[in-house]
Amino acid sequence: MTTVLALVELTESGALASGAASTLAAAAKIGNPIAIVVASPGKGKNVAADLGALGAAQVVVAESSTVATALVTPSVDALDAAIDAHKADAVFLPNSGDGREIAGRLAVRRRTTVLVDAVDVAKGKNVLIATHSVFGGGFTTTSEITGGIPIVTVRQGAAADRPVAGKPTVSTVAVESTSSSGVIDSTETLASDSTRPELRGAERVVSGGRGLGSAEKFALVEQLADTLGAAVGASRAAVDAGFVAPSLQVGQTGVTVSPQLYVALGISGAIQHRAGMQTADTIVAINKDPDAAIFQVSDFGIVGDVFTVVPQLIAAIEAKR
Image (cartoon, rainbow, N blue to C red):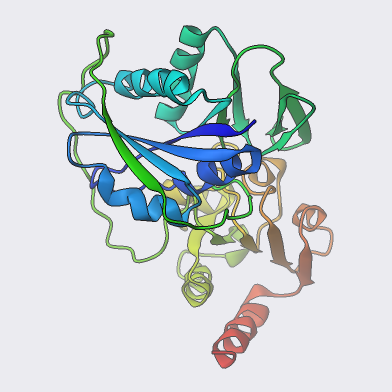
């Protein structure tokens, strides 16, 4: 395979969504990635340089006057046209809500199959092979499509090597959707005053569990996260105990992350939590229970009191700067 389309989502402000890096990195493992940006007229070219830094060799801005009001159909139309225009061998999308919807609709049009929530991809003998973490993270399996163009949704934050950055060529095409679609009447953007990275898609994550003991002591997680420039996460037990907001929950019923570094503080490691983080590149666990299940998936484990170990860790990191 040589030509791979990678759909890139934008935020309400026009910036790249967090799944862009993972989608392009996965596409680059298969072939030459072409980033497809679907945006209102005049609002897509400003991300071209950022996409080049993420490994896109070419950027196609598909301008649609209805993209802000029509649910997903402009993106389906843009990808459908781009497959023919570029003779694409595969299509990659972020495994977001919209990404899965677009993938399904595109698969129906192209009479092919979707490989959903891939955590890794590889070239097989004339096929694309996708790796999935399934059944709550208890098993790893692979899948492939033997007929039709492969359409793959990539887990946001999936571990992958960053492609070589470059200066992409940029082209613009007009896309006017003729398909029926649901209509967005209005949107509301909720501003965040946090300077930390967004949990989904963060390269580094520090999570805390019930072992922190209280919402006040959970501040230790935030201190280490700020030292590492990491996002803050939590186990379900910590969320249920009221230590942090539900939006920070990592796990099967929360956010799935796959960062380069995941640090678990006072987390026992129930299967539901491991399902949301065990595909991280490097996992560091600190827990006073030597039999804690989190040590089964950790690359580095420290048996000790987090309130003793973490301050020493923060001091050691600061001393290196």
